[in-house]
Amino acid sequence: VAAIETVQLYVAPQGSSVLRAPSDLRAFAQAELAPGATETVTLRFPVRDLAYWDVGAEAWVVEAIDYELRVGRDAVDVRVTSVIRPGA
Image 1: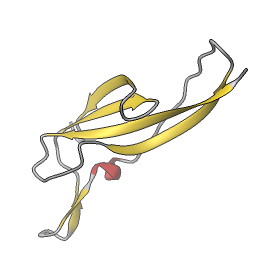
Image 2: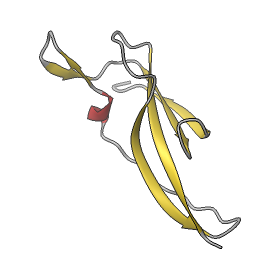
Image 3: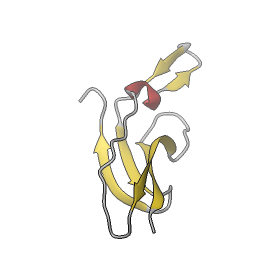
């Protein structure tokens, strides 16, 4: 019996200079899979989704820090991780 699987992408800022959530859901996709089947899904999100609102500067800021990307069925069942650094 086929099932719908949901793949979720969470972003976790590492060493932010401001208090931020430990991770945020940034993208997700669903795929219908037969038992034992696999499928490649593409998850995209704009760099601006890494930004936070800087009250003093009155602007969105994307920090030049590492962001851990976590992909899985949910925030706990993480299957793949990677690290990006914007502007690097």
